[in-house]
Image 1: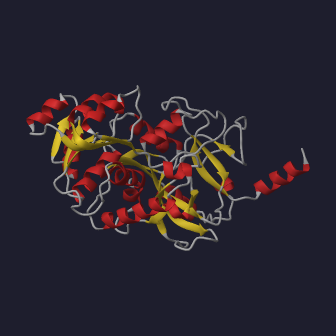
Image 2 (image 1 turned 45 degrees about the vertical axis):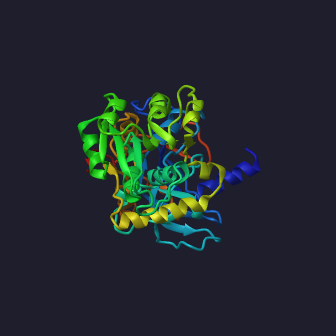
Image 3 (image 1 turned 135 degrees about the vertical axis):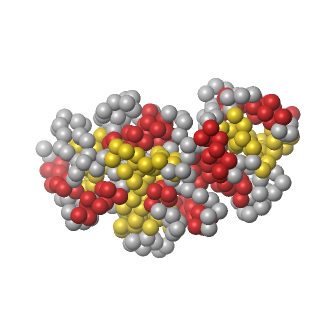
Length: 407
């Protein structure tokens, strides 16, 4: 072994470790090794970053999609974008946050994710967490809040201010999902009449509770339901479902000079020219573009700051509906399965509190080796390692197989 490699190995041995849950392949979510537990090197913040102790995280459809498309077989990858956490260390250039601050944010798509004890994040993308909500309630909100805000502001060109769009209406396709659950509330805040699609009795009641004025059953003819309710056209559409499947319907019902915003990929080409005769507009919304291209990072922090105020005032409520307890392969896999089933109402959250409690009970600090004191059991050594990762497999002692349902 080269001298440099030896020195790196020695240095790596003394670096702080942390528990994490991730993948080494993209096999079926039903497999026992769909997610595995590892002890990995704890990240250190750069001058413009925060080191955050993750308190809770939630699962989004984009997380499921990223896992299903993972190709770097054998290399451990941590997913998770939504975070509520506690600032543990502050980069030298950061001015707006201090150790101990409770914060929330959306991470970057191509960086190590939130399903770990600690994560680093650019401070510009972070905001102080709502003070009146618990960790689980906050964890449900970052990605869907920023996406819903972007739909109104960037997609439909509406100010997100009280009653700013009074007199206008909005059709939300897939109203009961994570983004729809926030979008309905924000649209009502700015004064819009909200029409939402839903399919089950529970999801219909959910969107009504959030403020939807009219609920359409997507199993039935949507054109007929709109017409029967007195709407020949609508002012704006937010498509949060398969864009191809709903394209022709949206073209038919959008009013002249109306606007459509979508967040879900097309599965087949669509005829954008069909909107020309109405002079209607179409916009893609992908809130992760900021982090992917390192543009307008401050805007994410500003949106989250505003959303925190709306949450603390009770104008917007948390959309968490199900909670798994403990950072473990079981909890993460179960949450992913719920979201992958495409029938989840609101958001599914994983609460890390049991892990943090266990760490505190054994007095594990930031400088101690989590690899020696981890609740994760040691596993086989024949798995490819990278950057000082030590394989951890088996079922965590922190698993709580009885998930909590919230409504």
